[in-house]
Amino acid sequence: MNGQASDAAAPAPARAPFPPAPRQPRRRASGYASLLGKALARLPLDLGETCRLLKPADGGEREALFAAAREARGRVWGDRVFAYGFLYLSTFCRNDCRFCAWRSSNGAEPRYRKTPEEIVSASLALAGDGVSLIDLTTGEDTETDSPSYAASLADLIRDVKRKTGLPVMISPGLVSGRALRLFAEAGALFYACYQETHSPRLFSRLRSGQDYRARWEAKFKAKRAGLLVEEGVLCGVGETVRDLALSITAMRTLGAAQLRAMAFVPPVREGPGPFLEDPVSGLARERELLMIAALRLSFPDALIPASLDVEGIAGLAPRLASGANVVTSLVPADMGLAGVAQGSLDIQNRGRSLASALPVISGLGLSLGTTDEYLLYAGLMKGASA
Image (cartoon, rainbow, N blue to C red; front, side):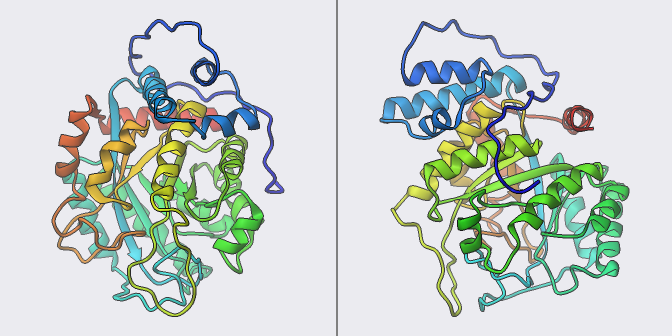
């Protein structure tokens, strides 16, 4: 791939075999309502229509967008949502991404590297809470490219999967094709590697010194290795609505099984050097919610996260109400673990626990899916991408 997005529509992936929600009769409509109807009918939207989808003209259109996204979710998933445990293995990173509190030039402390024993212990705690997947995330540490590093991550994947009985997502940043094959052989289900934007111009600003094409092509290598892929975009970092629409087109080209949109959070503790700021108060959060809804309508069968790493437990309801169907960034307390955008928000007070999320989930008329249901979905996606 050359990193350029294609407007060609790809076939929709197989639907998860969950009982569909009853469809409501729809009146003939025009304008924005007609556009939403087209999306709900699984008819592909062109770039201009996708831009319009992301730009509701007023509060009425905004709420109609979210309602349509919930309907699209319900048709495929019923009332089910899933939950992911999140474990940040190491907060050391060689990259200098301008949006990240853990970038190499920042003096953010404390940094840490967790031992395999600590990670397995935390994984067991999350499994006991009832999550459906363990997300093992790490910064691109100084040893990322060494064969021994990849082998140690593969051993950890194998150990976590065996001891918890849960599928594993690995989020190690940019790694070699050999490493990806090792991760797949160890039993990893997902490889998460976020482009953050599909505008090479904006990418070079966000990920200074990194190779756009190499990061993009790593996801295709992961698919060839037998891994499912998660792609993600960052909102509120100077992108245009057209940039977000192009990301949706690029995600269609990639065929990712999970799609994430997340608001930029200016780091609380800053070391030397400039960093990005939300150019308009609340823009990043609003863009995230709109993008979640647009992703749901564009990819009704996909897993779309509602991350607790932006606003903590207080931000879960609006993200689920926008069409998300995965609660991510659940972090166990009392284990010295950190988040990504928000290193400590709601962790020690157990606001990042599944117990805290469940009342929000049920309050929206949703229910927690089982691990067996999750694995059934994953099997269908693996078959569709084979």
